Image 1 (cartoon, rainbow over the protein chains, first blue to last red):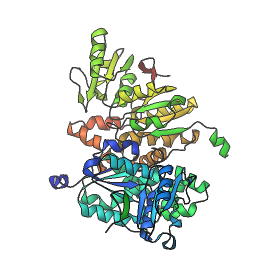
Image 2 (spheres, rainbow over the protein chains, first blue to last red):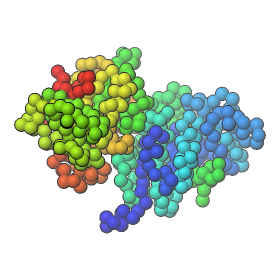
Image 3 (cartoon, rainbow over the protein chains, first blue to last red):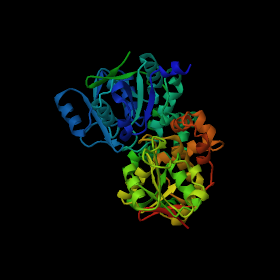
Image 4 (cartoon, rainbow over the protein chains, first blue to last red):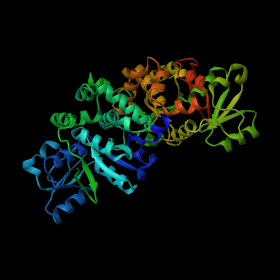
Length: 247
Length: 247
């Protein structure tokens, strides 16, 4: 029984971008997790028919893309629409009416940077994950039968509650298909099991730093949307410079 | 009410040495946490009358000290007695009969390195913490009324369960005396509240990596000792190159 388990692919959790280098990125599918709000926005835009999403590191690159191509440029810094960009990082904005058939160029404080980190470390595959597309992510990871790293974006390299919770939710669903030898994954699942009854209340009761930040901007609806399971349930796969809807 | 809380010193948790630089070390007392087993051994040796403990980074430095001074040289690498050293990192070895009045020079895989990292980043004060001296640590931190960083040693920079649990135990006891704006601290406390009923069983049930490692060496008694609260309840303070018993 034990040896069977050892033949399974591994499932690990990197709780901060500063810890990603400790894991074997090149043998793994990396799931970029930035629940509030980059990866929730990505899922929602693709779910509502966006052609693709180009993640870029800098606001300047985002503006440059906007001049060269017919795209929607969007992004935030520190939770607000970045200067020079037209749209922000709220998933509620990316309705089908607005985004269908269009290309979105997106830059965010934490999520897009982490994606490029995974890319430069030679990840075997990259997808993005959020509660909005939890089932699509889990089904894909089970089907692939490859090593997985759940890579939390956190906030400016600090560990955060919501990305840890999402990792815990994934682990809770797929752990039987993987070999789990990772304390961070155990911590994430324990946290999720405590919080699953009401994710929003858990964030509120535990004074989550990003909860406070977004509430301060009047974005309670964004938080609630981003903590809703499968409300934009598509797979978001990175492929040669773009995130596209997977099968 | 809110402004009163804001005037309190801050309490933060760094879940890995790789994250310590994200916190304001120079304004804080840093608590070095390496439950299995460095900081448990330190508490036990001081409790049983060791004169002082000199933490050194390398095995070579440890051996050099042993040649120059009348000291006990001890240390481990990867959980085993390091080559060239006489004693290991098991707290059970440091009985009063063995250690009373003596100086211990100690090097460990994770704990002593983290201590020197805190030192080089200009920590305002450094103490070591373990379940063995939980109350002494908490009482000291409450009395000092200064910012605190609970710095987990982890395992080769990966987050581990036991150091996170100890941080959670401290937070649970002292949080009312501090301003807590740190998701990692919330995660640690949630984990501790889940585990507190039986820390050993929690480690076992959650397949903690260090639990497995030490059990593989036949060191169950070490684990049980290190998870016992206040069985060596002294304060261990770093002062000019040495850890000594505090008041």
